[in-house]
Amino acid sequence: MVAITGTESIHQNQNLAIGYLLESAADNITANPGGGQANAVQLAAELNKVTTVATSGDSVRLPPSAAGLTIVVTNKGANAMQVYGSGADTIDDSAAVTGVSQMRGSVVIYACHTAGAWYTEGLGTGYTSAGGGAFQTFSYADGLTASTTHSQAGATPILASQVGFAIVANASDCGVLPPAKAGMQIDVVNHGAQTMAVYPASAAQGGQASGDQINALGANAPLTGITNTTPTIFYCLTDGQWWTK
Image (cartoon, rainbow, N blue to C red; front, side, top):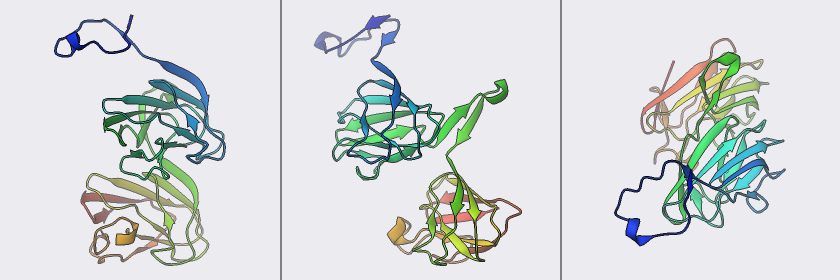
């Protein structure tokens, strides 16, 4: 293996055969309890493995961005963790103070093309080798409580590809989908006591200028009567439009 540090202009326009590239690595990282950007654990290596995420949302922070920099983050903790940029650095265009959620059992590449902005590969998927197999997993959240506001603005946000609502106390208690972007799929499981409603995102929630739409219900109108017997799958083939199965 060859460890390379610094820069050498003579090699900038040449192919360099080096065998294996040895990069800095850090293991057994504990995400900051309680989360937040300000106190997030600073990642200081090229390859980072977080092994302790005691509570969902515990946090880590990427190093300051620089064009050409890539950082690999593995979450081997028990819960999803929140990953923040440093200072005003964004991740996938999310505000610095918001960050992104990285699911457990996942390896994500954070790439910077222009200082100030990170983009990711693998953020919404993970892995498991349960039973000796090799399986892809998707971001998920269970145990959600449907909002009793019965309104688009107050509905419980759906923030993962697979979600389960455990508490639906009243008929038409509700959740709201993320902005509809082509290629997305959201699976909603209602295992509460009542039927529920799911709203599309409004313009204020990041949807289209007139609001997103589900099937032919019209902009901002909810899909109602979602039972606790069959999962509902939302597909998006065109920005702003969900179709269901």
